[in-house]
Length: 203
Image 1 (cartoon, rainbow, N blue to C red):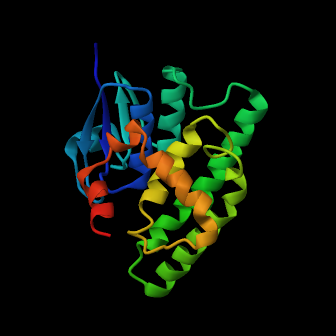
Image 2 (cartoon, one colour; image 1 turned 180 degrees about the horizontal axis):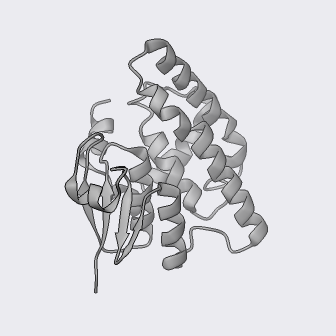
């Protein structure tokens, strides 16, 4: 049986969420760690943009994390990470769009060397997380009692809050409890890189 390969930045939230999906599907795969900015000849041959995550399944090469995640869910449908109902599936895609725009979209600015830009992005990320409280009311996971592709995307952001120097207020207790549920899943624990483990060890 062939083995799939994921070129993954061990510090990147985008790569992290793909690893979580692979773990949820209980798939055997190789991880090739490629640090941000590193020139990896094998990766460049597959993806001229030299970006991570890049996923290889036989002759198929996929670049973007969202594309990879949805491919994996369709290619390996059990357990499902996207709802079957088309209405709920559409709502899930809308939430994913929100997460990518209003959470992941701020990460580059958070890591900026400019203190003003970084501070503003951190404050925006914190406020956007607080807006997600409504999605967690009475639910075990985001939008639902079933673990989904949305939760795979939320987990890397929540795990990195100490690194981003973001502390949520007491009113955000449901978010913190939700985060703990995510962090206890085997797919999350087993697919942490060494760099990601150190995030929580250092704070």
